[in-house]
Length: 99
Image 1 (cartoon, one colour):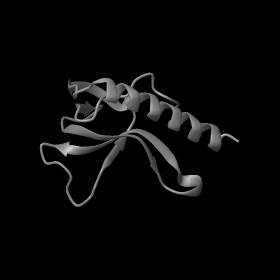
Image 2 (image 1 turned 180 degrees about the vertical axis):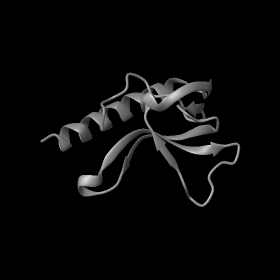
Image 3 (image 1 turned 90 degrees about the vertical axis):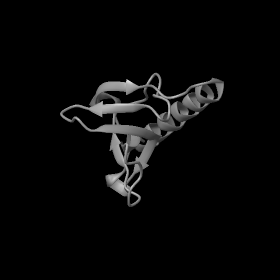
């Protein structure tokens, strides 16, 4: 849990991760995985592009893992509100784990 991002990329954004050539489409933000000591919050969850979700598998990564943003997804006022909500939720989880 590195911390809270200033701004999360919109859903539908297409990115390439460091050391990869495969595109990913962001489908989730502020994702909590694992249980107990194995809990971790990732900045993003994504599906392969153009394949999409296959076998209910999702790839998790952080902002620092992004090599290139190929396409930035749609954003509007609702997305801005959601960004604020995600930031508050991630901060609350980080605070919870640090106590």
